Length: 264
Ligand code: 13P
Image (cartoon, rainbow, N blue to C red):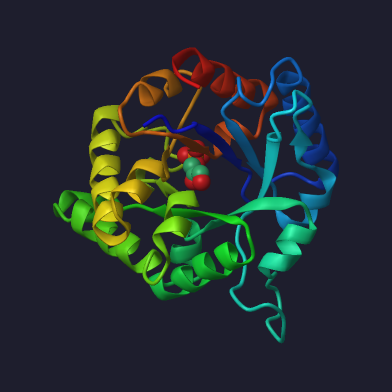
């Protein structure tokens, strides 16, 4: 089964609106030379205040797809109410988002997000017609203690609990080993592929073989233009969630270009 790769840029808490716009323009001018079927699914995730400084870019070849999709970096599971500082799925959609990143290790670590909260967010996102990018990953201590697979399987089972196989199939998972995020220490691609295969097996167990074959599972953690080809050559890595290297148009565009060399 061939799964269309995704290259997603998580801009985290960076860039003012004018800077976000400039970066967006740099990516837009790169994708203009391609059609959406030639490109991987390109997703950018600016901070909330810059969501309206960027926009999704429709393809004009008649394929009905976008050349650039927009993602929010988080959301709340409730539709509205007294949740100061939060945004709903509908608000993200209203601001032009098709995807929402949830369960990023920075949210789990600094804002005490639990597996249960991430499951509620995933359900709300799917109910609202958007696609969750569900993050998971182990700390260095967990890796050294030999509990990586067990920890990630627990995160995935919890995140997907009570979600239909059809909805699981549309979802995206990002495996981001915490020790590889922002450290320059990319996880060896065969090891990342092994963990991602394990995640696919967990998806198969909870949602069936079709969902496991369809769901796109990305790798994240110090992805660079020089690492992406080897990562994309692996059997089960369906793309990348890129942090630092997504903050410059040149490096993000090069990651997209190098992805196209391997498989789109
Ligand atoms: P870096 O690419 O900066 O390591 O960040 C990865 C990440 O956390 C993306 O969500």
